[in-house]
Length: 148
Ligand code: RB5
Image (cartoon, rainbow, N blue to C red; front, top):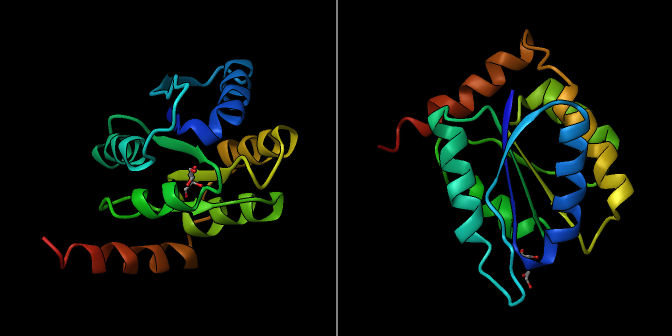
């Protein structure tokens, strides 16, 4: 599995934590920054990550900003992306099993590095359940393709 990760200035600490987790788990990753001392605009990071996932260049994406909200809104504008904003481990597992999410968003002003690490580990290692959930996810994709 190959993962692309990015954050704005509000998510740099958690991004570093998740990068070290992926190194430990032997997960290949691409880090798109930011390496910023001054504020940046989260769509400039969310959209390139989302496009890499939607195009199939990478399998999954992880986005961190202050709240995770801006990143998740921007990522979900890209067709083919299913981005979930997650701040608890139950949802991390459920969103992989039920929604087959391909991008995880988190907010560094909401949770600490330890919880973010646990969430990311669960999200990265939990498979999609398929079955009845596949039909539901397919309905989202079917809706998306009506907007060319
Ligand atoms: C930046 O101040 C902040 O707005 C951003 O990190 C994020 O929380 C947006 O949703």
